[in-house]
Length: 146
Image (cartoon, rainbow, N blue to C red; front, top):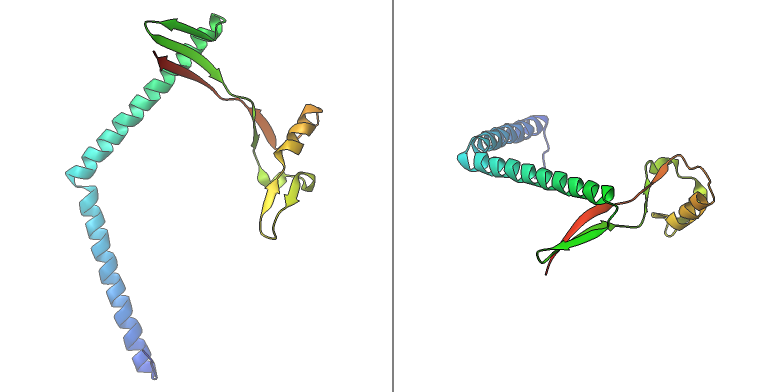
């Protein structure tokens, strides 16, 4: 559509703004209607219950890891079940990527910079203090059924 006059421009833009306002109002009305619907309320209730169960499971796993730690054991077997404390190797976590020295960066393409975590780990083993990283180790409780 080619607009050649000022009044045509004003009329066309006014018409577009009017339609945009109408469509935005309809969308807002439908979103409100959906938010108040029983289905969304039921979905949100089940999401909340699921989150509570996940939190409860996490707390139980933490308690059993503490029990195993206090007993100085890594695993036990009972009633066809094996409960084991699983420990992963340490992971290097970069807290602030903006503070990474160029010594730890290698340019692979003109748009991508790859972080050389092995070089950082090597320096950490040599007791170099690097403020923007820390080591983290995941521990979980593994349960196997026989």
